[in-house]
Length: 441
Image (spheres, rainbow, N blue to C red):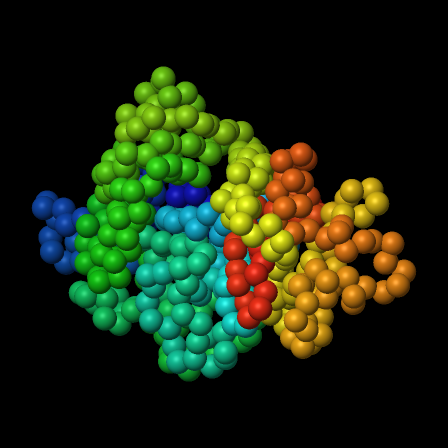
């Protein structure tokens, strides 16, 4: 996605010949747009109104440019680091605060579809359940439209609005706010087609523009709900990760928001600088709280995710759910999204001590009173029965493997996975540990 000044230059190229955007190169797009929206006392009233109308025309063009960028990016495959990051956020139930308008993150969520507790055993979540507070959606057309926001995964707060949010411009309270559900899947076919029967797309986009003084755009009920939710989360957060946010001095509202925190900061940015240098990003953040980690360079985000994946997977061995010695025999299950919802696999060690998976046939499992590992073992073809029932993972074996070998790397049908979290579950007669795993590539 283009940064602010790049966005300004692209808008200038798209607007009709003769549209006045003079002076944009001098102070940058944000300053230019702020001045256009400001009532200047030395200008006549009709001139100020004309300047504001021109600014509103530019704001509308922002959505058009971003639509083109999103359409182009949507056709590309989802990068591995983004899939991993989504599953890491899911495993720790993170609060993700973003100022981006685009829906690429939502499309990536629709691809990854994190697994949560559900009926009868587990289900998956889509982006529509993770982005909240949000405007009300149109009437449900498909089963996935009836799914409500879910607290078992992470949460996304889009403080500056979203490309799939619409309203009647000038609405003083935001009562006209509505959203289109994001049904696209990054690099793949859409989940379903979302018809605009309610006419939401005939309205204007709900985007808080890149201007210095945003006060006039914070009046809607949704804006209050979003920013207060962000404030509540920041006040109690022990750690805040800033990814690609430069914290400019003129972004006064966000600086004040972050200033409520007592957290430790980590910075992921192209050039974070040093916490000892007040001229750098890390130096500005250090005035708000301790900075104990910086990751920089062209591959800063993927490097950060790789490091975080390793540390999270390594910490799994100390999780209470694994350490509980009162239920040593509980079976270990890997749950992954599938076309029919969620597929479940039991884990076992092969002769080389590599961890393999065997899918459970749910129709056979329902009629059995045996442990899940025994069901999987009995379902195995004879060619695989060089494996012993004792090679399958239960809580005791899982803990021993984590303590001796570190991160749990699993050989799945479409590549290697690494376990990042474990959830204790009881379903009907079965007590189990369900693993969440991220792809290793």
